[in-house]
Image (cartoon, rainbow, N blue to C red; front, side):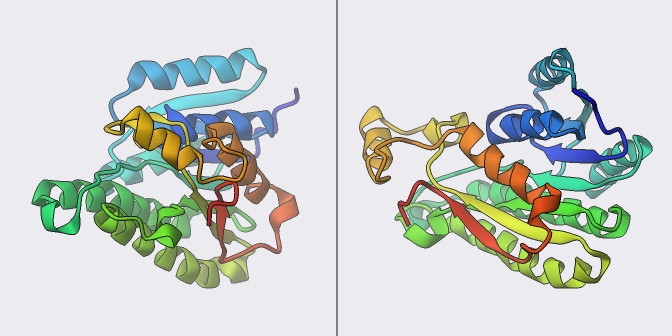
Length: 245
């Protein structure tokens, strides 16, 4: 595969789950991929090695996206590779509980990672991305389901959708598209942790196909939004959930 070194993609939370699948898919599409991680260095380097063995190009960069200065340093590393042409904000955390039982710590970590981590990345991208670039944020189909125990999580993802739509209009004159992908239940550690087999089976059965989504399902949509073919798709929240909502 010929790698187009003039296109650089940055994937936050790119060492596992959906982020990993996105990094691998974008590398296969010709992007040089910056695989961001916070603590999972070994996992991030495994992603990079896999991409390189497949003929792609990638680099792992540690940064805590909840910290504005570290996020700026992360973008410095991406721009040094030849500019920035695609951003995918896939770093996220999930804490579920009835609103009455959500702790301050639950809210603080979700606000820090899901909202502030996305906001800092979008702010950097707004100032540094090349004209004609692509920005894809990660929301969630839980916003459409209004499921009990997801109130805090939905609040942070609602904020992500709100800023996505505004930024699409702010950056549109530069040919930059900004869209959100809202996955349904996906078979990742983020989704399955803390759930019983019965709960997982029940959520899988909500989809007409009777299964959970996979990281590859989500990565395929992200790759389309990161491509030239998606130039007329902007300011949208696209649900990738197998038809559950």
